[in-house]
Every structure is written in C-alpha cells, then in structure tokens.
Amino acid sequence: MNQETVTVPGEPAVGTTHFRTLFPTTAHGAHTARHAAERWLAAQRGQSAPADDAGTATASLLIAELTANAALHGRVRGRAARLALTLTPTALRIEVTDARGERPPVPPTPAADVHGESGRGLLLVASLADAWGCEPYPPGGKTVWAERAGSPGALTAGTPGPAATGS
Image (cartoon, rainbow, N blue to C red):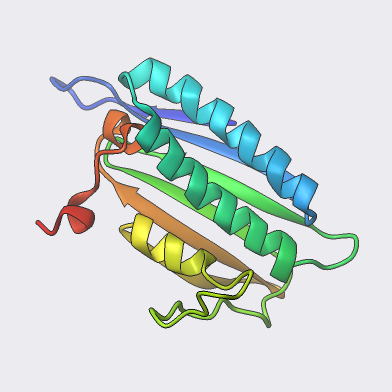
C-alpha cells in the first residue's frame, strides 16, 4: 500500500491513497482479495468520515463482481490477478487486472437471462458505478475498472456520485 499526500499552499491537505494486492484466480482468491480491500476501505473511512452500510456494500459489490469475473473469466494457470484501489478526494477507482486479454468483458444488456445462474455481474457494475471499462494490459492481459465519484466519506457512505443522481 502506498499513500501520497499533496498539499496546496493555503488549502487543507488532500490525500490520494492506493491499495494493491495480487490474488490467485480462484473463487477463494477473489474472496480473500475482496475482504482485504474492505478492511482497507474501512480504515480509510475511519480517517475521512463516518459511513453507513449502504456505501460500504456498494464498494464491496463492485469489488466482488470484478474480482469474481477475473477468477471466472481471466484465469490462466500459474498467473495471479491484481486488485488495485485508488481513493482520491473526488473518486474511488477499482481496477482488476488478469492475464486473459483476449477475453474482454461483454457489455451488459438489459435483456440479460433472468433465469440463468450468471451473466448479470457487469449489469450490476454498470448500474452501481459512475463509469466502467476495459483496457489492454500488455503483454497479454486486461484491466477492467469501475469508478464512483464523490468525496471520500460519500464514496464509502453510499451517497451516489453525480452520474447516479442524474445531475
């Protein structure tokens, strides 16, 4: 974990904090990474503002969906995935990098199979995040990311970002 603090003369200190962990591309690996990230976010929340369960749950759901997708669709024997969180004064960015660049995520459709056992994870990500996407990660992987806008307290307190409120 790295922490970077930027101070502007005459302004209060503004911090950007980072969390990164590698995890095996298994269901247990994704679960362990999610719990480590939840503990880190709780520690950050304690430093910035009180939070309620709704915001913690939203961040946790985004992390869970992205790590589970990496474990399910990004698995390459002997290769780990990476979970990275960046918390700034205005946004939370979640990135999950795996080794399967040839398998980009399929954008969600509202007509997802409601009777199927899977296939709605990215629809959930799209509805909870202000933005999400996928980028190549050389030499052969990909990074799937999601962002929520707002203040650090709001990001973990469930206050929707600007896109979610329609403003």
